[in-house]
Length: 119
Image (tube, rainbow, N blue to C red):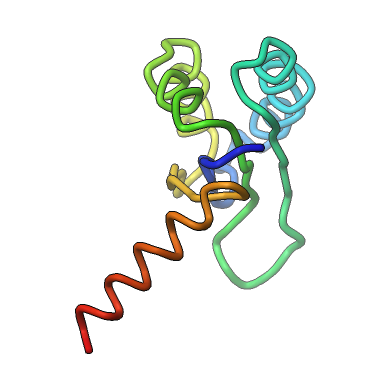
């Protein structure tokens, strides 16, 4: 089971690139990310488009795998190009590392240790 993840978040599509943003999302989740999963380079991915709301967030993808899988993915030229494409069609793109599933005990320990240091 996965221990690590990337949370890739984006804002509202860049004006004039809305169609391209939607196409990139559709081809990413049914093409590129599915291929990574089939090839064993990630364990899973989940995508969400957020309903219209008052924040500037448009959606996100959570990619999960082992630390080694995600370290290798971060260095992969195709992954870097894919993220760059997202940045070209959407505002406020960010990638945040995450602990998931089997990695949660590490996160709990880190926070517990930090809290003890503050006592």
